[in-house]
Amino acid sequence: MTADTFLRTTLRIDGWSTAVFGVVMLVASTALSEPLGLPTAWSIPFGVAMLGGAAALGLIAGYPQIPARYAAFVVVGNAASGAALVLLAFTDVIPLTGLGVAFLLVGALVVAIYATMEFIGLRRMTTVTPRQPA
Image (tube, rainbow, N blue to C red; front, side):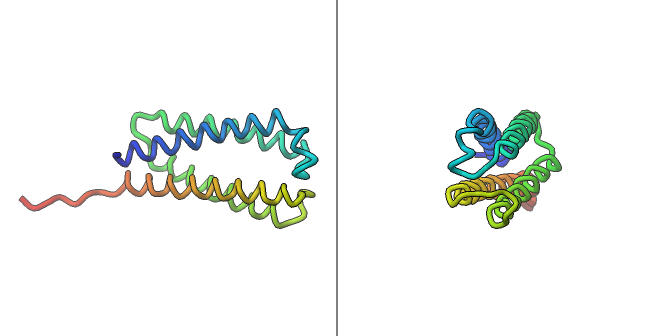
C-alpha cells in the first residue's frame, strides 16, 4: 500500500465513522442523555460538529494529491479532540455518569488511533526517499 493510499484510506474511514457517530449523536441525543449524563444541549452540537468534520475529511481525502498541510490539520484536530474528550471526562463540566465517562474515554482512544494513523500516513507521504547512486 502506498503512503498516499494509506493516508487516503485512513481519512475516508475516519470520515465515515465520524459521520455515522455524528448521526447517532443527533438521532439518539435524548435516549443517550440519561444513561450517559450527556445533556442534549451538548450532544446535538457534538453531532453537528462531527458531521462537519466528516465532510471536511471526505473533501480532503478526495484531493488528487492530499495537501500535507491539510493532513497535518487533521492530525492536530484529532489530537485536540481526543484531549478535549479526556478533559471533559475528568472534569465536572458535564454531569456524566460512569458510563458517560467510559463513553468519552473510548471516543478519545478512537480519535487518538485515527490521529496516529493519519500522522503515520502524513510522515510516509512527506518522506523523501534518497536516491541510489548510479
